[in-house]
Image (cartoon, rainbow, N blue to C red):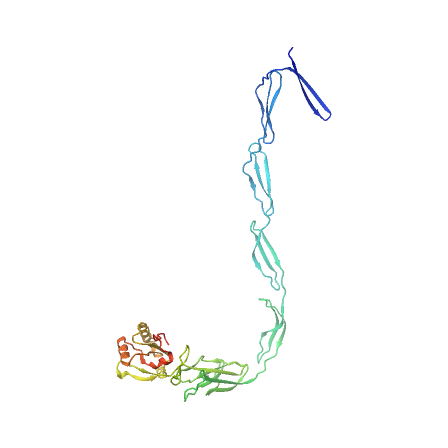
Length: 407
């Protein structure tokens, strides 16, 4: 009999033990084909084969394959509800779901109505995710009444007025504590209007300006000649003063001046375009906005018969202004200005009246002789007044190039 081999298999659970003895002759196993139990995504499989001689079985473990998930199916979260992301295994159909937390609202203000004294205000906000609207009420403020009275209806000499305390909030028309105001008491004030020259000099001899005071919407209530006028005026009315009959070349800034009845006096300044007399030869120079003196000039005509001597004030006679341009015959830029002066001299208004009748143009040379100036006037065809006045250099200086802008 062949040698026997005893195999002891024991299985023990707690205090129980079982033993199985198998005795077989030692031999080379003759295994059959493998038999397979397939692994799943979550459970191991195995394969095994059995010896045909002794019945012994050989086993091998096949590890679980694990899930093969595809792209997630997503349900978006909203402001108030959770969303989800679910994946499914392509092998076994098992699913796994991940919760996407609710977003919560994200509000932004789109309308703001301020509260008023008696009306609530409101702030309206819109959620950028779901367009949900949220409103916040701003309670009415209540009135904020001033401690001071406001005149609602001014009193007059014929009727009473009315005053009250108003709410100080902008746009609120609420008022309280209304009370009447007594009629005004009519009074008479002594009002004086004076005039003088801006330079402090007297007006030319024989000048007699007329000062007139008139009531608003009515005729004159006082008038007089001279440098002042005093009149008895009613304090409750409006008046206007004017100065007329001024010498040629003298004017006031306005045609009429409103009287301030609280100060009882008004002074009106008389200005002039030309100062009386010749400029002093003391080295002083004209500055911007100075009123020039009434110096004389030697006007040069187209021929010697047209030459004459005159003053600036005489050239102003009948005109509103006099444009003085300084030049000399050899000045290139001066010559470039001539077409503009000639055009201005010849221009007319809509009624055919020449502008040069009201605004004179005087061209003064500081350097040229009479013959040179006459030749320049005739050659250039100048219709304007041209004159020699080299003494002007003492008042405007002796520039390397004479000033060509309008003076």
